[in-house]
Each structure stands twice: as C-alpha cells, then as structure tokens.
Image (cartoon, rainbow, N blue to C red; front, side, top):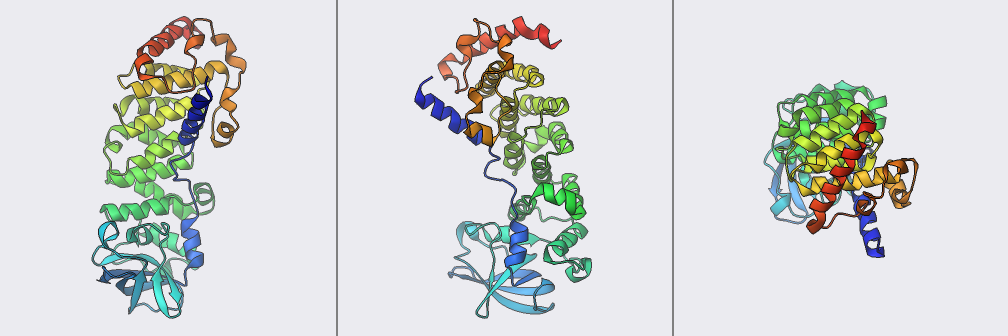
Length: 369
C-alpha cells in the first residue's frame, strides 16, 4: 500500500469514528455559568439590519439574575439578523443574557457563529414559572422547566436547531444525575414530529442507548425523510457497542434506509468499524446491495476482520490499530488475500472485489452456523 493510500485511509477512518463534530458538550451548563441573567421572554427585532442587532424582550419569568418578571428589556445580538441569522417575530424562549456596562446582550450558546435560534430554547405560552419549578441552581431549574413543558416544541426548523443544541449536553452525566433530562428526551422520542424524534434518537445514540438504536431501526424509513436526519446519521456512525442485538439493528438500518442515504452509510460505517465475528454476516449482506458505497464499506469491514484488527475508535485509529494482525488470520486464505484492503475500493474494481468477498463467504459461511 502506498503512503498516500495509508494517509487517505487514516483520514477516512478518523472521520467515520468521530460523531460528525457533534460530540456531546456542556454548552447549557456553561451558558448558565456565564450568564448574568437567564429569563423566559418574548424577543421581537427592533433593528434587525444594524450590527449589533437590537431586540426588545418582554420578560415573563426569571431563572437567574436580578431582573424582574413582567418588565421589558432592550438587548443586543452580535452582528446582523439579516440573511441566515434572521430572527422570528415574537419568539418565546429561554434567553441567556450578559450585562456589559449596563447593556444587555444575548449569549449565543450555539457558538459565536450560531444563528439567534440556537441561543433561545423554545418554550410554550404560558410557560411554567421557572422560579417555581425547582429550588435548585440555574442549570437544574432550566431542566425542570423544560421537563414541565416537554410535550411542546415549536416545529419550525429554527426551534429544532435550538433543541439540537440542548440535546448535545453531556449525555452520560445527565442520564445518571438528572432525571429530568431522561424525561425530556424520552418525551421527544415519542413526538408526532419526525424531526424532533430524530433529534431525540440521536441523543439516545450518543448515550449508547440500545432502545434508541432499536427505535431508529424500526422507524428508519420515516426518520430518513426528516429534516434532521443527519443528526442520527452521525450518531449511529459512532456506535461501537458490539452486542449482537445492536449489530442486528445496525444491519437493519444499513440495509433498509435506501441507496445514497446518510443513515444507511452511518450504520454501515459502524459495522465496518466494529467488524467483530458477530458483525460479519451483517457486513456480507451489504455486499449484495445496489449502492456501491455500502458494498465498499463491507469490503473494508471484512478486511479489518480477517486482519484481526480491534474495534476502531478515535484513539486506536490515530495509533493505526487497523494495521494490527490478530487472531482471525485463519479466515485469510490465499484466494481472498489480494482483496484485503482498508482503503476505499476503486470504482472500476468494485464488482471484482464484491465478487471475491461473496465467494469468500461461500467458503467460510459454515463457521457462522
């Protein structure tokens, strides 16, 4: 293998082992800590074209800070609200505010380049009073408010972007220490909105929740049509639990989501990176699908299997663990050896490689009965 092909392979494997730059973070907790005030209020643009933009906010409730309910504020937003940053009229949400020498400014919890929507977590009217929802600190009180209103989410795409910011909180910590988190996410997972269900399923996948993986397998045809389908697609690509039930669900998703579908590719990526003995039959099924990209992933996953490589994650990809030669060498015969590759198969040789691995399976299948 040439140096260029090795570098290309390392890059490709690192991409598929990273959950799409959507790694769970602590944005909501950090925003709570950084904010001088956190309120429930209705924002209405006053000067959308100015920089910074100017908004009027009617304060309905106060989660943190010395502001008072039933008052009005003038707040600024970094940059202009034109184009992709355009603000909805009368948008009710949780807002995180910073006081800079007497001037209130909205903190963009989705990052400095995020749209306004990614800083305002949508809540209904009338919202449950945050000051009465919990006696805890800002972070816990926000979750209590969201739990009380978990049946409601504005179905406009901007509000869904805000929900994705919310659902990228640290999942393992929240599931263990904050029951409200699980209540909120489980409620979203049963929503009539396909888009919201997709976001909740993605959150569950990042928590390693087998029920979320099974739900995705059962609903993959509808989730694939969601406006937020890329979220579970990235999340399922990072799945590394080799439990047989999980592998069966991954096989269903990869085989049923349809050609050129991000969910199918994500599930196939996961099977390729896991490539255990139990994953092999599911990888073999991908060889016969019409989409060459799925067959390509199958060839690479089977190659990793016969090489005895460990399950691949970000760390051992960086250490080139996929070059390991291990205990599965008994499945590597002279006939298949020329078709063992961890690099993408050239398009003009896809049929040759696929045929070779199908013939390998015909020789080896008895070992899996």
